[in-house]
Length: 519
Image (cartoon, rainbow, N blue to C red; front, top):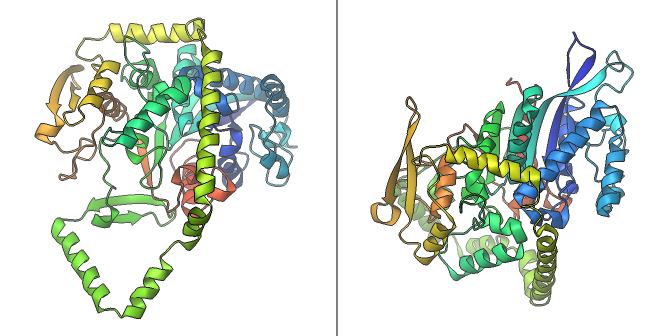
C-alpha cells in the first residue's frame, strides 16, 4: 500500500495472479496466502477467474481480452469501496462455475483476494488496505501500481493482456512494477521431433487443445503467416514494449521433473545446460533451498575422475553395504502403486483424460468459431501489431512462419537458425543465417559454456528466444526433487507441496517487498 499524503486517496498496489491451462483460481491460492503471510496488507492480491477450466482452450488472445476486462472490473470494485465477493458472485452466476470444494472446506472460496490471517472469511473489506479504523480509512482508494504473476499458460495470457492494457493507456496512469512468470512456455510446447513420441505429442496437442493448442504448437496464423507467440516477442511490437515498461521482469523455470514446460521453453533458452546434473557444480541459495545461484560444467577430466572414484568406492564396499544401499534407494511405494494398480488405472485414466480433453476442445472450437474475426477489440490489436511490423525494415521483420516449422519437422537435422545482429547506435538489424548441424555453434543463451550445443528447436522458437532475451529478465532457476515439479513450483495443491516448491513461491513473494523498490 502506498499513500499519497498530499491527496485524498490511498494508493493501492494491485497484484494479479493467474492460473495455467485447465486451471482455476485455487491453483494460485498458496501464492496468495504467502503474500498475505509475508507481506500482510501492503499489497492487494487478486486471483484471476475469468479464464477458468476449459476457457483456457480458447487462445491466448481471447483469454488475454477476458483478463483485461476482469482487471478493469476489479479496479472499479476497489476504487468504489465495494465488496469483491459481489464480483465473484456475478462471475459464478454468469459462468455457472461453483467455488472449489476444496477451498470451501478451508472456509475460503476461490475468490480473487487473498484471505486474511485471522479469518476464513474472504471478503474485500478485510483484505483491502485502509478499511481498518485508522487515518487512511476516510481516504478513497485508487490503484496506482500494478504487478502480474502468471503460472504456466497464465504467463502468456498476461503478456498479451499487458499489450492490450498498454494500448488503452492504462500504464500512463498506473505504474507497472513487476511482471513474473512461473513455468511458462514462452517458446511454446513444440518438442524437437527427435522421436515418435515427440511427433505424436506435437500432433495431438495441436488438435485437441483447440486454439490454445495451435498457438502453443506455433502453427497458428496470427499475422501474415506468423504465429502469435512470435508476434508477441517482436522487440518493437506492442507486447514487448508493454513488458519493457515494468520495473522488473522475472521468470522461474524448473531444471528437472517438469514434463509440461521444460527448462528451455520456461527460460526461453536455445539450450539446456542441466541435462546432466552429475557433470555440473551447482551452488544453491542459502535462504531458498531450490533456487540455483550459480552453476558451471566440470571439465571432462574431473567428471571422469569422480566417476572412477565412485566406482572404486562401490567395489571396495561389502556386499551387505551395497545391498542395503540399493534396497533403500528403491521407491517401493511408487513401484507398488504402478505395479499393482497401474495396469488398471493408467489405461482408465488415459481414456477419461483424452475423452474430456477432446470434448472440451470441441466445445472451445464451437465457442470461438468466428468470434475472433468479429471481435473488434482484438482486431484492432491485430491491426496495430501488423502496422508496426509493416513499418519496420524487412531485415527486422520475423522471417519464420508456419511453413518453416513444417519444413523443420521434415528434416530436423538441418536447422536454419536466423540470428539478428543489432547495431545499437544505428538501430539497424541484419540477418545472419547459419546451419546448426553443420557448424555446431555454441549456445547463444550460454556462450560461456563452450561445449554446450543448441537444442533442435524450430527456427521460430530460436527467433522468439533471441527476441525475448533482448529484454532484461531476472531468470530464477529452480531445482525441485519431485515427480511433478510443474505443479510444485507454485504448490498448486496441498499434495504437491514440498520444500523446493515452497521456497520458489517464497522467493517470488519476497521480491515484492518495498512495493517494487529494490531493498
